[in-house]
Image 1 (cartoon, rainbow, N blue to C red):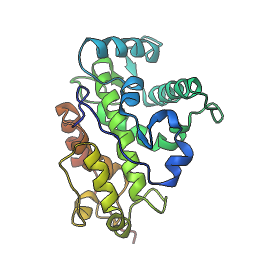
Image 2: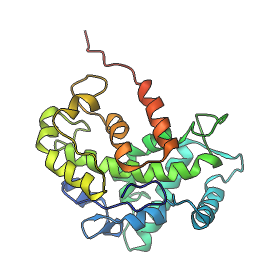
Image 3: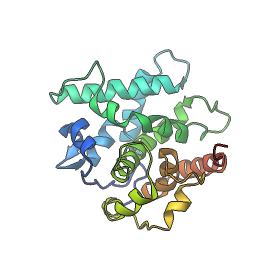
Length: 238
């Protein structure tokens, strides 16, 4: 079941220890992300219900009324919204920050980059109201991809080596199958994902590759392709 804001999104299993340490149970369905929780907190559905939920969120997010949202404002929105949800379920924040924020913050700028620039004639440095639904879908996808990346990154150095990729293939494919994705990765995909040729899979590269496995939203996929085309090639240090 591919997720595009109106279809279901399957959950995935808990393997890597940092997930167990940092992500509270309120985000999980058993040992997995609860897909309904992600949609509730970051509503991406099309239709009247989704529009109503996002309208209230947008008013709170665009509190200065300038009809655009910066990366810093989105980052603060994510921190506060997830903090409210965690406090509601009895979890103590760490210096005012939710645990999922501390765990998954590296993926937030990737979600923001995917959504901004989708609407024509809008400033690529900001999210407009027309792009807000895509930002919510991108947030859900980015969180999931970060989880998959975390599974592959067994050394926890924010990079995935060829050896790690090979060792974690079964787990990665298991997670993709949970999403209902028909994509199954293999050893040979490493070089395709490592688009800069640096010998390591980075989070940006993982987002570009796995997004198509998680959404069929044409706007996000088109923006993803355009951003991937502008990725600079890897230059080995001299």
